Image 1 (spheres, each protein chain N blue to C red):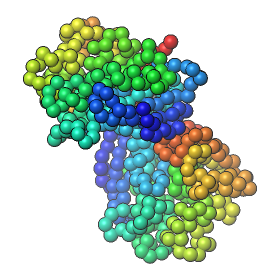
Image 2: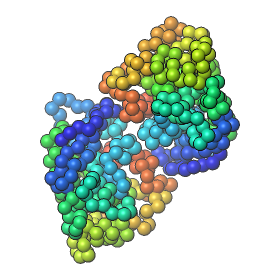
Image 3: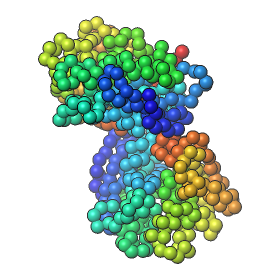
Image 4: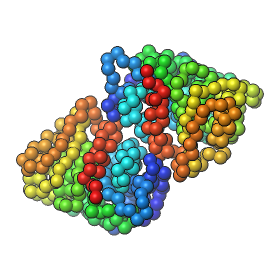
Length: 277
Length: 277
């Protein structure tokens, strides 16, 4: 693992790191914020998965998470959203291919070789972070935005007990039921929709997966709310399954980092309360 | 004045606006954050002047000012750093010409026609903001970063009584005594250094200008500290003049928005305490 850059910020260190990923077969870049801490201390960690078109950089620059992480003593990890670079296939459009990995392990060609973001986020990167940073892997939370909210929900649902806290900003709640998701899951996984259910938060809940509880913020002025995000499907699935979900519609807010940053500190305090020793 | 964009953020409205400036003879773009407020209320306003290469967008995206402004009920205005566009002269290098107006009224050709940022920031934009936004112009504060810290200090020093609160992040404190400033003032104002003194915070203080008090944060790891910013000259000038200046050196912090955003909330609380009714 190579340190690309590091800044002193908000009483901690904001770093950017690069490593050769076995899962994706490419170099992968991610950012980590580590608040100052006592020597030898292990801090809880919150994973933030980003949305379509994003890299680690968007939330790192615009997410306004550092003050709250420093106050609560939380490490904040922001991975990239797909493999990238020469030799990695790509597609026209912002919603498939590079920048749009959808946190799946692709099975279709030409994607199957590199687009293995599920393995990367679930297995490879946690092992690296556990080895290289002062984190207590018994105290993990996960969140994300849009496609990354989909990632956070599905990864938490597939790994019961791993995350003490789960939240999302404007998540895609059911890729099987929206154009972005149908394009992505069809392209990466093929036509058999049964294989898609492991990557659909609502389907996972229908199939028996559970979360301890859940916080979701969703902007009412989000241009993707009715056509792509469909928050109401998650509310219904949680209600039917008895998952205590706090799903808040925020008047006037859109899909941007102006929305995310407005509620980031509240989400981190919500995670912090569940990640205490 | 035209609204370019507006986002709901942090319990307020973050807007970007454009207008035809008489001072610069160009269109000028600026951003304004207005927290929610009671109908008819007039809020205090803090001006933020940006540094070399920046537009309104850098602090608007990375400054992390909205939470503190919403909490204190402060309007936050971020202008551009120079005239821009076709027909506006420019120069090689990032430190002169477009993006580097240095908050002066240029007298040298070819700059004199458009590079009139002093008149724009001191006169034209305040009149526009007072007319178009819910601001109480009896309660103004000013701050800025680097070249914008220079702007904030010199504008406050030249306009006694206008600003109740003045602060700066890593300001250029004496352009007459650093390469950036000598290039800029020489280029915009000509060789007569007597004309430069109105644009040099330390010279203005030596010549009798005063501030009520002052907060400055300066990163100790700032690559421009010893060669360009020279914070020690401001400390000496304030001490000699009896200006109560709180000048803090912050260990490990550099010149970036990772530094600025770390101390933005403290600066805004410092302004808020001086801008109360």
